[in-house]
Picture 1 (tube, rainbow, N blue to C red):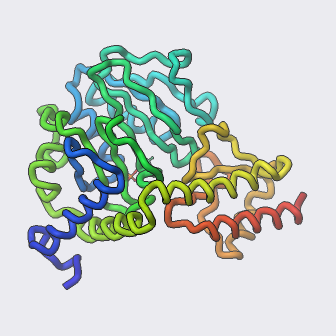
Picture 2: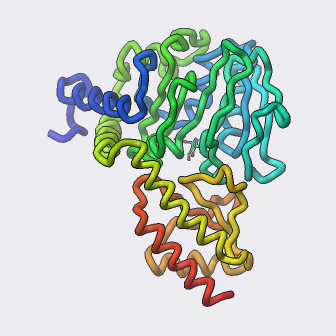
Picture 3: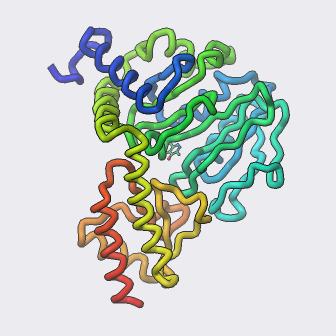
Length: 332
Ligand code: PLP
């Protein structure tokens, strides 16, 4: 019987979801006072579930907006809390992360939480360290959809981490939430039952039929990441891959350019433009002939974007770099 056919309440599937959770706990060193939830609805559903579960409608909550995903999360939170965007990188086209020393943004001292998007997928901007909430009773919330399990993370720095599975750990349809236990159980009265963390926590993510096959696949990926030596080793590989690509861009004498400030360049999403922007369509076409696809930048920013998630081998990046050099030689 395939996982697709099994009852989600049968002992076979129970062992699958329990092993997936246990392997994820090992990978990220998740302490026992945190609950792991396997949910549905994508990371976008969490944009609403987070304020609904973690604060009252008259509580202040702060959002640092370093790209469009953080912006979407903030926009949704306004409906359920007194949400403020305390910094936005929009005027710099989302190419940087602000300083945390108080010179660029001021946190609301009563904010229940501070929300960040740890890696902005479209712009390729990644937090390398994390701001501390100004409210001693507040906590940090992070959208890690596009860098989840790409490197070790100190979970204890966060009240809640969430991620759609589809970039690094499994098929779309599974959303993972890691939430500190004391934050569960205070959902606003209007919270739909399917968004209530307590319902899912009490039912071990089996309140209704979960995305069984997706969870099974995530479990296989967690096992594989552990076999690779865990996230320390995974990060080493990701750093090596990203370095090869960023070096090629930086050493191209301006033929290729990455707009993101060097210190916060993403290990996962590498955006770049061509000095001669009229060649971009040709670049995409020629790359496709070499079987390198999905290089077009997001429709909102243009240019190119190479997403080099965990599953992309170094050889794939090396092939892209060789192509970029050849293309430059032809067109410089
Ligand atoms: N947050 C980030 C950082 C993303 O990259 C994405 C999707 O690409 C989302 C949220 C939205 O995720 P979903 O499509 O699972 O709702």
